[in-house]
Length: 591
Image (cartoon, rainbow, N blue to C red; front, side):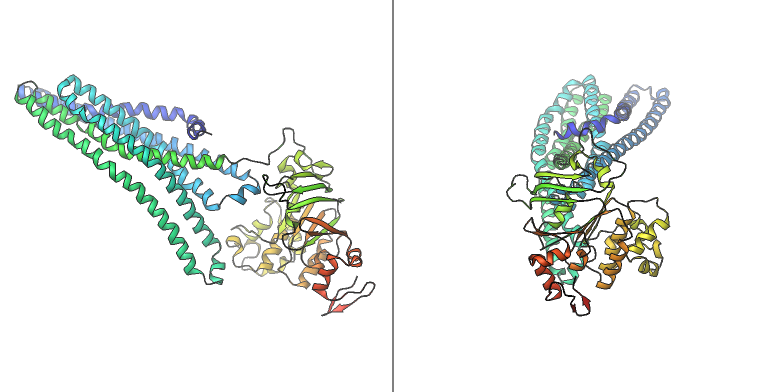
């Protein structure tokens, strides 16, 4: 993907505005050169004694031209600012929408800080280029060319003398552009890393304080900050190396004018008013030369930022809607895995996380999933909503391969309550109603009651209108898990996935939640848990080990088999004898 080719359609949407702004730029450039010419004519009028009758007309034109130039420049700046802001608005919206369409794998391999840098600093470089650099380059070129033409008509000898430094300026600017772009690319990389370090530290501030690692985090941030600083200094040194020479070339024009023009006037080959006119136009030559270095810097910064944005956008979207997706008003909830194999690394299919997984869950049934950490439990349920695509085999919902469904349609009827809860900086009501924002309060209180969350919510200062801090700061782990469960239940899904949802609540609360969940009939439930008590009521329990289903059956059947499940049970509750009800620690652990 060529960066400028990619961004061009966004500029093209507001091409009329950019063209209008550049057209006004002609007026600004012309008005900028009229006044120096009038000044020269006024000096000539003083010399030939006709200044009295010409003074008022000249001054009137001078004032009128100044007003036209000021008004035109104001209009031009407004047009370019509106065009650039609209361009970046569309860009930011489209990039954000593109990010929303990415799969889990994209966020697995891209840091939040990098994405934020693309959405902020890099897009701001695009805005600066479109709001300033475009018209500044155009204006300086027009003024430079117009000034040369005017000066040639006044004195071609003096103009040639002054243009002798132009090739040197061009060579220096080219060298600067060649060296400064890699420097800006490095800056963008280091800014992304700095962003990531800062974002991680702020997001994980409680962990940092819990382990008293403030000094370590300060050192890590200082290193990233120093690296970013060094990158900026390196780019500044390139700029500092070439800018004085470009400035020297611009200022040498004054020397050329004084020496060459003075000699021509003294020898009678140039009239004084012509020298005054050329002197008045001198800024139109040396100012573009001075600006050249700055504009090269800005342009290279723009292209470096554009490269970084396009580098992110080149990431392949592995999971997309099929050409003719299947849509269903509501899923029945039947789930089937047929010889499913999955690997996170498509290039390493042998490093499979799941191997030959096959089972069937009837609509409205409950499936418990247990196993050691890293056995593939969460990965398995992530395949149901097609958050990842299988490496081999098929996942079917209602007898249809999930790859054939419309993604939004499929995921609309699947809700997940995960152990690692994410709550938005919104009200409690807003978090519970996230999937159904227009739902009336009575539709939210029922799932909150089922999740045993209604009680503590009403004890909050503003009840359901209480603002939840970022990521649920201020709530306990159990409270956050119960809000997450209420959010999933409020969506009224056909398939409900509970991924260790009650790990942070006590046994009594968990039992109450399990009883309340029985009210939600007709939903196919997948219950991932480490506690046997969470999966005991399930219609079928899958025991996973190293990515494979090693045992399956009901609670009683698995206990009778005396395999891994039996070992997990004994580890949690003690010795169990088949056919006997045993109490240990006041908890019924028998069948």
